[in-house]
Length: 176
Image (cartoon, rainbow, N blue to C red; front, side, top):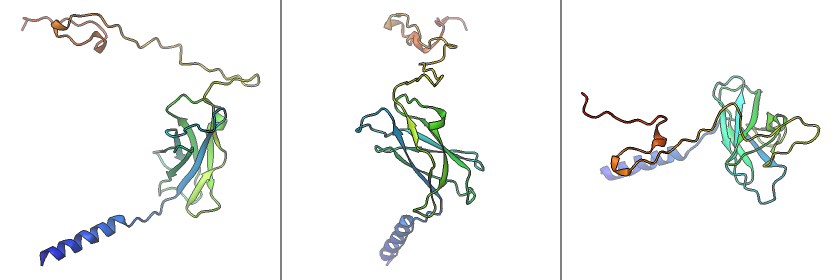
């Protein structure tokens, strides 16, 4: 008698958990590369979606074809003032700020769907043309190297590698 009741409750629970109501709005878009080959893998590129009324932005990760989907928060008004911004990827990406940010507009095909107004484009190599004053650099020269020096200490002493601490530490043993 208890077994049919347990099976009924289990099936009801599974049916309720599979039933998904999606009342939130979705942003769909894609990124493209201007100097890549046709078989370039766009997977792993992060796109940030930020709206005016929301404090916490949403992050989407692109698929292999460069498409992404991000859910807008439910607290966004019917006409949201949102931006999509290209954050980065597994490899270094280059591009202008104008091409890395796009406004979000209502999509015409689907209800509760938005898209980006301008394509998010990037380069995989640094390209500077004569009209642009952009300069590419690997990093800022304000900061020095973060490499550590590893002093060769014998393993018998039991000390960790010196790269774990900035100054060599020699413990004083025997003093309480």
